[in-house]
Image (cartoon, rainbow over all chains, first blue to last red; front, side, top):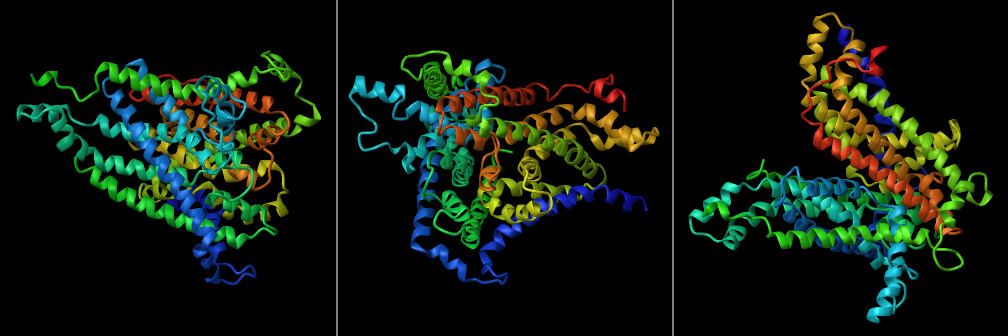
Length: 282
Length: 278
């Protein structure tokens, strides 16, 4: 009886999760298999091999790969710079706090920030043009096109790298460099044979996380690129709001399914890589 | 000899890296500030900041003021759900059904693993049904926002629960004759305060910044309002973004600083205001 009452306490939360987490997830997955009349079909899946759709997936993957790679390298550099500071130092705590805030920063306001920074009328653009004679928009204003996403995305990718990768670099044991020095190794030997190999799995894991983060970002792109379907999230928007005629739920469903599959793949790889990372660092 | 070896960069390199990155990251914020000071007639002035007080009630800014109001209501509703439904249930599961915790771990990763833009495809039919039964008001969005907030709320509360030996504490209190309500409010909540406050601040930050779900379900919130206003008055849109950014920075930096400093603080010994009357 007592346990029955205890179970009762879970009921509201469980009901909520079923209705607003599991049901939407299943609906998102299965709307890709719906023929629009309530029956299930596999014919929609052919959308995924449609040239337009696969080129959008490629565009998304390219943007994600670029921002993940650049973000990871710069972020790792900042992490390395931070290792010289004591955990109590003000700089380290400020970077820590700023990174955890900026990693969440995205969307409309990020888009505005970059329009103000490097839009056609921005001080930066005018200054570069006047002093260096370098017109960044000589070939047209690319901020509102696909390449324009890269810098705004880096604005949250680098901080995300800092918060995910710093714990790994911070856990490198000082004894290792001492031991290697006793054996006659220089600093470069240490990094080449010990430091970097130990950090490699964590770096790869963070890279995957950044890739997934960029691939699933919608709001920033939506605010910068008001029309068209250059990347997968924008293609879902176009299908949902019916930019190309009537809204097409099963089309959006297949795209969502494609994204979910890709995310599961990345998350699977991530957990494998992190297991490897835990071998030397746990 | 070995002590002098450091894997950290030399001081000049460290300073250069941090300075360059710091300046690059400050640039967009400074550019926003500069943009809001631009006068419509050329030159710089405070006119856009001064016009802020008169926005309320002006027709052309209705999307923004209504959106802000809606987002504030949504923050409160989502906050209510986090505090009154999520937190007690997470604690209840920790105390009585430890075996379910693994499942909860997995479930609460879902909203992070599944992009919001894919989730919207599933929310759309749910909200079509809600529109027919509860109406198409903005307030119903809090039900979807709860899901977006859940991973963050769960993580912060669960970390605190692990750290405070909640099971032992509650057993001790129960043996001494305390009711479950007393255990929750007088024993656990004081220890969980840091996690609960973090979860609340994160909730507000996420709801106020949410765009994806609101815009694709055609609801007016702060972010969709901002985007709409930016087409007619970019100055006010950027100004409001800058203001809310500063507020969110302070909120979220508070969360992160709390995480740094309060982790090992002993439990408060005397009951504080909001638990005393329970």
